[in-house]
Structure formats: C-alpha cells, structure tokens
Length: 403
Ligand code: ATP
Image 1 (cartoon, helix red, strand yellow):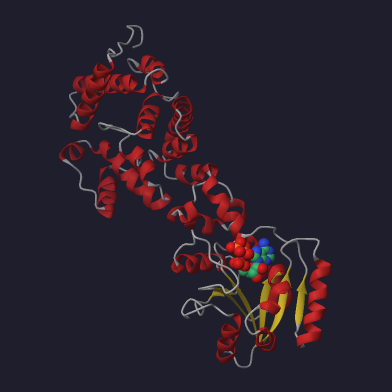
Image 2 (cartoon, protein in one colour):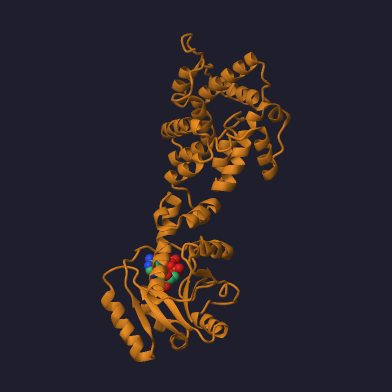
C-alpha cells in the first residue's frame, strides 16, 4: 500500500496544489492521498489575515474534492505546538504500518528540508516526491535530490509536469482587489467569497453569473441597467465604483419570490415583516435580498444596507444607499414614467434633490393607485426636503413634457 501525504498551510489551497497532487497521483499511483493542513507551520508565520482553522480545513476538503481518491486529514490540527512533519509521519506510520509513505512537496520545501525538525526521521519514514513550483530550477532540484539520496539514503521522486506558478500569499493579496479567482478551484473561491475570508471581494463577472441565476430572465436587463447606472453615479459622486456595481448586481436577488417565498426567507433570516410589508409583499424583497446577499455572497454591511433600503429609502442614507436607490429607479431600461428624465438629469447634479423628487413622485403614484404607503418612503422624502431647505435649494419641478 502506498500513501501519498501532502502537508501545507493551504491558506488557501490553490490550483498549484491541485496540479501537484494530480501529477503525483498519476506518476505514483498511491492507494490513498491525504491533504494535511498544518495547525502551526514550523517554517513560517501564518499571515495575519489567516482565517480560523475550521475554514482552512473546510477549504482543503473542497480542494481535495476536486481530486479522485484524495481526502483531508485533521491530524495536525488536533495537535498542540508546531506541526512537525516528523510527528505526522510517525502517526501515519502507526496508522498504516505496512504502507510506503510518500511525502509530496514543492521546490522551496525540497531545497530547505535539511533545516526542518528531524529531517533524518522524515526521510527514514517516508519517500519524498517533488513537483516544481516554477520552471527553470530543474538543475537545482536534481542536485538536491542527489544530495539527499547520498547523505540520508532518501528515496526522492522528481515529478515532471507544467507548474502553476502561484502562491497562497499572492492569492491573498489579489482577493481584496476582486482578483485571483483563476488560481482557485471554484468551490474554494465560492467559500472564500461567501465568508469574505482574506478581505476578499468578488470578481464581478463571477458574481454576475451566480447572481443572475436567481433572477427571472426578464429581470436581467433591469439589473444590468442598474449596474451601469450605479457605476456612472459612483464615478460622478466619488463612491467606490465596484462596490456600487456589486450592490446593484445583487439588489434584486430575491425579487422573483412570491409572497410565500418571501415569508419563508423572512423566517430563515429572522426578519419580522411590518404591517405595510405584509400588506404589500413587493416591499419585502429589499429586506430579504439584503439578508440573502449577505448569507449567500457574503455581502458586507455597507453593501447589504444599500440593498436593504433600495425600495423605500431611509432618512440619512449613505452615499452607496443613495446611488443604488436612484440607479434602480432611473436605469436606462426603465419604462418611462412622469419625471423620469428630470430625475435622471438631477441625479448627476444634486443627489439629494434627485432623491426628494424620486420619492415625491413615488408618493404621488402610490396615492393615485390607492396603494398603502410605507412610512419610510414618506419619512425619507420629508428628510430630504428638509435637507434641501437647509441648503437654501428648492425642490426640483419636472417639466410638463416629462410625462
Ligand atoms: P504561502 O504563500 O502562504 O507560503 P504556499 O502557496 O507556499 O503558501 P503552502 O500551503 O504553504 O502553499 O504549501 C504546501 C505545499 O505545496 C508545499 O510543499 C509547497 O512547496 C507546495 N506548493 C505551493 N504552491 C505550489 C505550486 N504553485 N506548485 C507546486 N507546489 C506548490
């Protein structure tokens, strides 16, 4: 029996790790392959933004799921102190006494193995397999393999294959910039985004694809329009354009659900609908959308709140809340309604005036339809009317032809 063992921080596990394991499995045909995340790596300090052990273990399991015959072991996470490979191999030897153990590693590890804790024990208990992290170091690897064979009687397999030149450190630096997805298995990337590990913000192409799956096909055009308008407003008013896009992409993510669906989501997230929301369940999608976006896509507070308030508004809205509220109301594919053109123009001249006008128009429309009016809408309109007065500005009238 041959057991292939791959230890590391897996912080996070990436396609370099996966390529390495796949190559080793193809070359060495082990009966069992184990990925073993280290609790405390002896050779390096875990980065400050390292998530909880459970998260690293879970991500390692997701990565192992990409490779047939590969499993994850928590043997090092359960141990106190530095996670020495020699201790792990001793435990593995006890567990599989008749097995040949093969310890897989990258170039950096092979070149430094003599400085590890108990290198003789490591090389006595297991064979080594090395898969290069980058091209051009074949000579160094071969020389080190020959040295280890000679000096320690080690068995060293030098694996051949195209490397994936990336490290977890590089990926951690890319994730907050909405980059790095191409180096990660999709399941690991989805988990990182959902939990916003490493300060990650989603790649917007990835988010669109996932978020649009929750929309009725007829709503996609509106959401695309809202994103374009939110971006334009963010540029105009100095907000983070990609955050505005993210909020707009997600703003209607629960819109397709009917009353029963909305109430089920409310129950799941502990949302207690008020009497206006119960009377008019279309109001609920803003609240359920915010909770769903936070749970499913890890939307942080400032983005969730822009989704939360995009239907009624609220007094004292943040810049992002205003942008998403208005983008939803004035995006290019909106069917024309009275004052639309005036609100569009005003949104690029004075945000508060545009909000006041948009809310005033909504109040008039709801009154005409005899629909219940949520007090937040009226309250928000009053708040922004007062702000205009304080600035000495008059509310904007819309032109008669803007009908
Ligand atoms: P960090 O950047 O946080 O130091 P890392 O990318 O080096 O992390 P680890 O999880 O610490 O990854 O490494 C585990 C094992 O995987 C080590 O043996 C390492 O040499 C190997 N390894 C890491 N990246 C690659 C890669 N791109 N190709 C091949 N092997 C790799």
